[in-house]
Length: 356
Image (tube, rainbow, N blue to C red; front, side):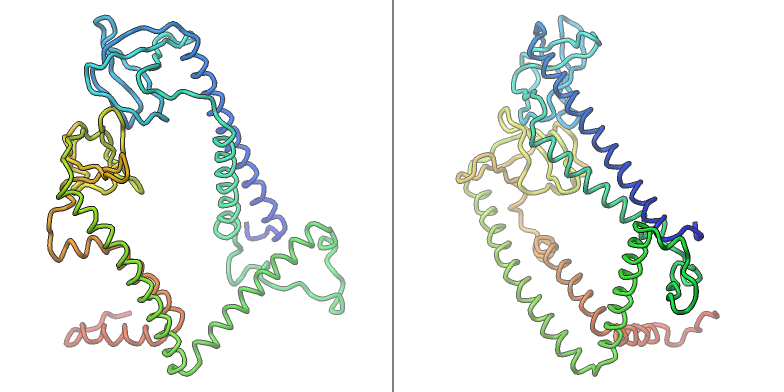
């Protein structure tokens, strides 16, 4: 791949991005078509009655006793309702696949894809295609350094005859754009090197001011966050406790989901040892009187001492460490490296160094 000209690399990555966008469009179209078909089925087919035996809320499925036979049926993943065993359920059959059942009621929300759904899918597809384009150019197809001939600037017209391939309009424009981008990165790198060579007192003063500013912002945000946590703990101690049923353990960016009445509601806080919880487990919660369906686990009010403080403020602490670490890397990289070597020497005192 090292012999491919820069313009060709741009074209290859562009083709990958377009292909990804086309695939995303096909997925959105297929999803919209599937939603339309299911909506037509539940609104036109004759319903049959059964009894709910078990519900897998996370998988959008129910186990139903249909005339003495236990069968599986699909629920609408868009619904926010959940029901206990023994609930009467109405289902319809897919005319093309008789073994496929769809739950019509209670609490389902079958509907065709809206323009908002299509736009969201299109935007996600564009973002993914741009990401593929960027990754392709900067990782997979980036020229090898420093031997790559693509990193060498072309000779000027005064130095000799111009390569005839560079006269193509689109290819020449792409070449110039790539060279300009590389020159900007090189200039930025030299600017940072020049800054790092400045007096440590100047860099240290700027770094100290920025650290103070970041610390102030974190303290303000942390104070507001802890006030909200304190308010939630007061609610747990004063509001009536309601037992709910765990439906979904949640995941990245999502708290566990419980059945509250006939609604599936996401808890406002996570549970301890979530990975060791079982679906169907009873979770005591309280409801925020000023915000219906905002549920707080009762265990949230338990006092845990110093570790509770660390856990409650973990996002702020990690954010502060990340920002301050980045500032240190930007302003005092050599001093940090020297401090690391000194610390390493301290740890290795009296121990032989490894041979290189």
